[in-house]
Image 1: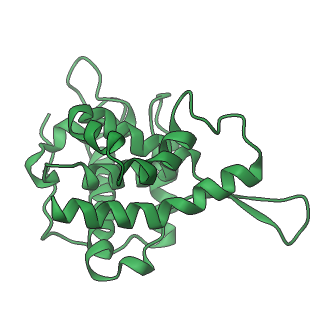
Image 2 (image 1 turned 30 degrees about the horizontal axis):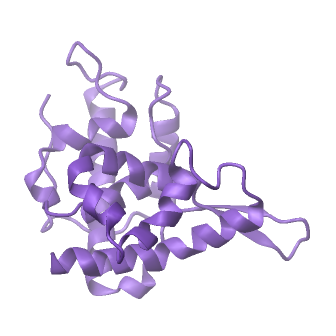
Length: 204
């Protein structure tokens, strides 16, 4: 099945809140357990853009797009989509969101915000961030290029930046049984860590 490749020069209009909700609903409605939600998708796309030593534009779309919905099935059809039109809509929304992340990191990095879950605390004035889904999506991108990522998980400069992602998103992550406050603290480290990784990525 043919998929478009990532083109950094293409449409980078950020998705509106309504379009993000629409994309989340489209993915949630697919008849598969493997589809990401929009938070995991946001982390996955960030991980793809950050992968050391590789330009995402050089990676065929067929290598990374189907991961978002759990694969296309063994018959090579549009599964799990009801139609080619539905699949095309999801792909175009994903590519626009990908472009907007990359553009934000280049043009206005301090204005970029990842998509996390937030939950109310014990009192009305407390809100906790939980980046578990985002981090899990990020690690799915890592799994596509483990050899490229291995040095960053071991390097003294980059390993601490990846630590909150691994702690929140890994199956055996250190924060799997953590309190809401601990998860919130780790989640709030991620935006600055990602921008630091992006700066490192540009140097390499």
